[in-house]
Amino acid sequence: GLAKCGARNLRLMTAISSEIQSDDFLTIFNSQDLSNVAWAYATLQIDDKPLLNAIATQAMQPLYLAAFTEAEISSTLWALATLGVRHVEFMQAVSRQLTADRFITSFRPHNLGNVGWAFATLGIRDRTLMAMVAERARHAGYFDRSKPSDIARLAWAFAEMGITDNALMATLARKGTEPGFMDRANTK
Image (tube, rainbow, N blue to C red; front, side, top):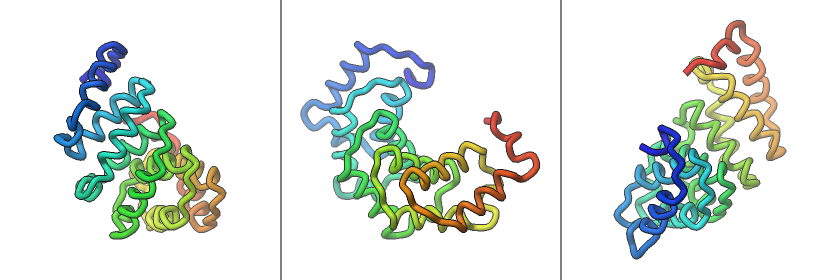
């Protein structure tokens, strides 16, 4: 609701945050609820670090991370990084979840870019995770329906972390210079 229409009512969002953090309210949230709340606060640029930390802590509880979809993980990481919430334990738990069952290797370009961008933005250098990100991105045809921002975000993440993957950079460069690719920059 409010975030999609850009209705930034700080008093209301503060009241919602207080209610969410009271008692054990977060325990009734599922993974989508956690992700949606994090996304809403980041979208509205409401810097509520206690709430985002509480969401990250709740998301690490047994069964939560395993229930997160690709989009929910991507969105939650994007929200934390956008608001500068560096919850290292959560980021490590996400990395373990994404790499343990190779879940990251099924991510679409936008979500894969968000994962890399979030880790790089928060200064969390995870070589194992980024190796799997690179593996996924190097697959033939992977970027066929992506936007230039997906490639830019991924290239920036690797550069920011100082992680070199020449094969990935060659793939990104090839895709980025294909005729018509940059025309996708302003499409939804």
